[in-house]
Amino acid sequence: MNTGAIFKNENKKAENHPDYKGKVNVNGKEMEVALWLKTSAKGLKFFSASFSEPYIKIEPQIKEYGDANDDLPF
Image (cartoon, rainbow, N blue to C red; front, side, top):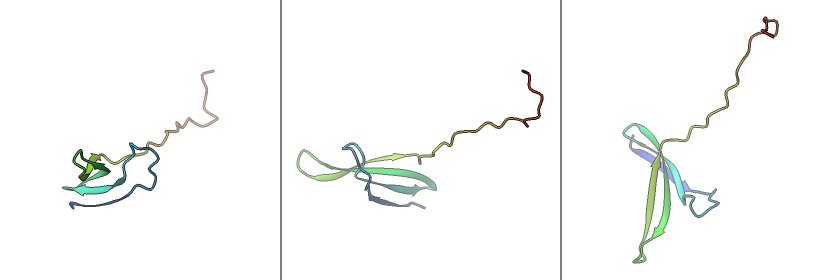
């Protein structure tokens, strides 16, 4: 609990994509974290962070119909 790992984003294709990303577990809740390396107006480097719920890929639902021998209304 209260641990995580963050890695360099090797798939960064656009400037708005995070420089680093990973997963953390805080108080028993899994979250995704994204980090952007920024530079302040005074030239200091810092990370800007964003936390989000884990991405869940939704599989398309396949509707099953009855047996081919069922009585069809048409």
